[in-house]
Length: 253
Image (cartoon, rainbow, N blue to C red; front, side, top):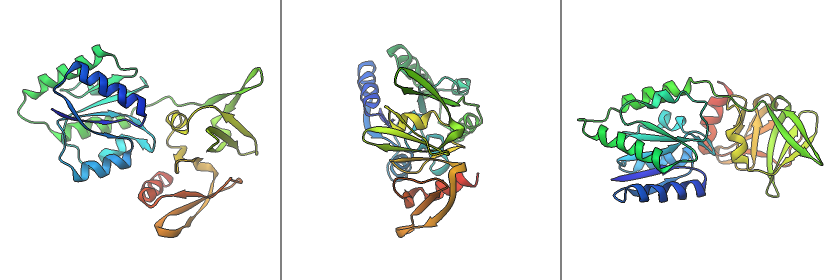
């Protein structure tokens, strides 16, 4: 059996691969993909595997976006660190979910469901699309405040006050509309997963921008976009041409 892992955290992907090998040595991991963009490209040009393990939150967006851009014709077992989703949607046929940190017992359960499903005559991609659509409408509880360490205190910061987040010197600096700058010792990936995707967009590897902070957008070289904010930024915010359509859809949503 050939399988693909979709996971943007290297250690998590390695741990899942190791756990899969322990549970079932017949499963061959043929690819580890890290982003929505990687998945769309890979599934567009490669024969589909027998199974996909897919993280719901990826560095450049939610994995649901993959299904809007390419048809995946094999069973998917979703993985997530968040239990806010209506996970009952996964309890159909062999489509299942694994809640992080993934345990051997949960993985064995999911693979048992896949085995039972394999006895059926075919896999219906329309069923998968229907489940993904139902998951998109689920309400997820996002961060409304962050606690910023300052000396011997933790200072609350409302996400409503955040204009953009910028990765510099191995830390994330959070810039507010009133000119304040806070620091968090974490990754931009981790922060993005906690934000409401309707309010914030991961423009590139260095920037997360708030929708209400965007003043205008300039056409840039090689079909890229330059996002201009109402506040001062350390450097230009460039959206790569491969994500221009996604950005426009997000901004006009």
